[in-house]
Length: 115
Image 1 (spheres, rainbow, N blue to C red):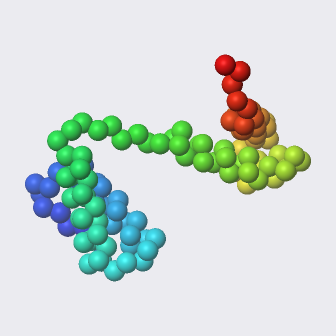
Image 2 (cartoon, rainbow, N blue to C red; image 1 turned 45 degrees about the vertical axis):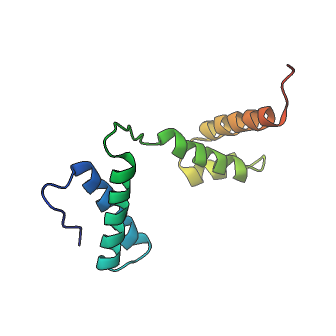
Image 3 (tube, rainbow, N blue to C red; image 1 turned 180 degrees about the vertical axis):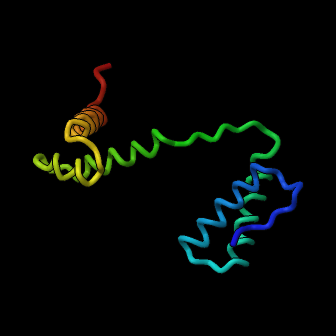
């Protein structure tokens, strides 16, 4: 089941409402009516808060990769490159690059600047 929206309801807000509805029904297992009401409330809140302006919504690839990379670094134990490569469907070389980049960022964040 999906949301039934008026033909004149803005397409972008319809996409927001449908995405919210799908998430609410699949993840929270809400019934149709409460999920539909919540989804429309979310879309209307977006309309009221952001409506009338131009807003670019990024896909968030860097954000997702950043979370994945931090998770990989958090699971790194010094000798588990192959295990992490299998778990994240990456090459061992890519895991090494991620670990090195995260290690460098970690060290940099703990050191104060000279000036």
